[in-house]
Length: 185
Image 1 (spheres, rainbow, N blue to C red):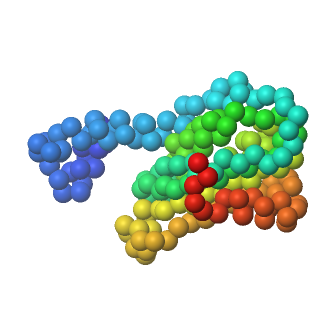
Image 2: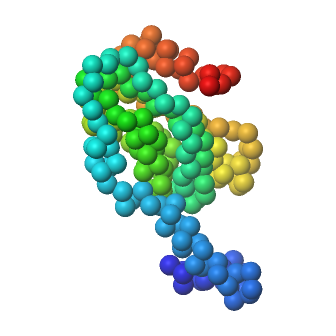
């Protein structure tokens, strides 16, 4: 990969041997390996040790999960917040595992739409809940820095499964609960 980065620098009109760029190929390789480390993660390992049987059947929400990913079209970052809810059917999951699930899928080359549905479908399969809802709000540098150059445009995607798709009231409750408001802590 380092040689590819050196060649890329040359194609851009740079001298990869100049002082400021000498270590760039190593740094870029290290960064790209980290930013795509989700390919190396086993979802069963991430989730299964934290799934528990519990008699709880109300909505569980973890909101404002930070996410950082790379757009597969331009290899530019997109970043934002992910909000996840599910209504258990006898199985719950450790709350931190929801953030880890977001991390696994966001550390891959992505489009926001697929990222949203991957999170939702993985939770649906792992927990078999009454429903799953995922909303992602993200700022895409491919829109901000190039192309249309719209600095304040956010993309919002959602995936609603089970009762979140079937019951407008359940969906509305989730959407109301993830609205930004003052801190409760």
